[in-house]
Length: 235
Ligand code: OAD
Image (cartoon, rainbow, N blue to C red; front, top):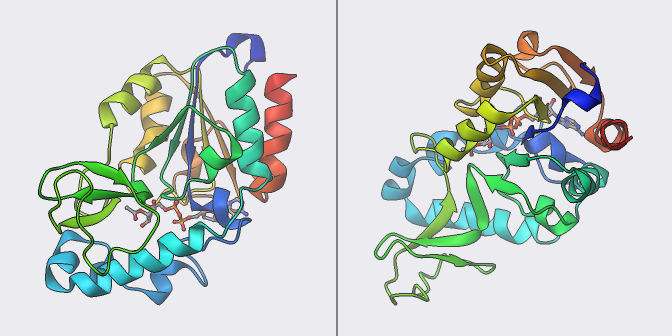
């Protein structure tokens, strides 16, 4: 790694591994969510059109479950870095839970949406939502019974890509934490960063699919690796 004095702007990409120690299932690997549910059944626009009850019930369960979980040491350390880092910093999360925010982080971008919003397909309004959607409650903005989870499904475009690429352009350091590198476009950020000459660091339990692209990889649980890295960054 270059001297810390050379690093001013940081982009951090987080994935399910950051929330694993809070008791939220990851997607891939043994016991992962996609082993228990087929992506094509619950996480595509086609699935929602075909069987909306199945999809709404699946997300209602997930929305209820995450509200019982608490942020862990990795979320807390990233919130501390966000609060204390003097340069630009953006936590781009693929996670649809709100544990970064509940730990206190402010500079967070949810590129795959969030469980705690409902999106009205009639008027396009997004409303904070903590309860179930299965009974087709009315949209708080327009009253239409046309709410869906505000999560990005396979085949849909992740949110705020321009802002993310803008932050990557300006970054001196790109850090990927707890993500398998299996899902694009997030999986491509490390290549983008490398091509821009940005330093790249991976913190993960095991090597991700894009591991070869990182300047440095540290393997272990996020609850240990992230606080140690944040201590280094803040000196
Ligand atoms: P994955 O389930 O694909 O990968 C989780 C990664 O976290 C794996 O590489 C694990 O080794 C690692 N991991 C597990 N426990 C960890 C721990 N305690 N500390 C550190 N690392 C740990 O999850 P994502 O990469 O986030 O998209 O998945 C990306 C996207 O695929 C998700 O946002 C979701 C999913 O399908 C959509 O739903 C659109």
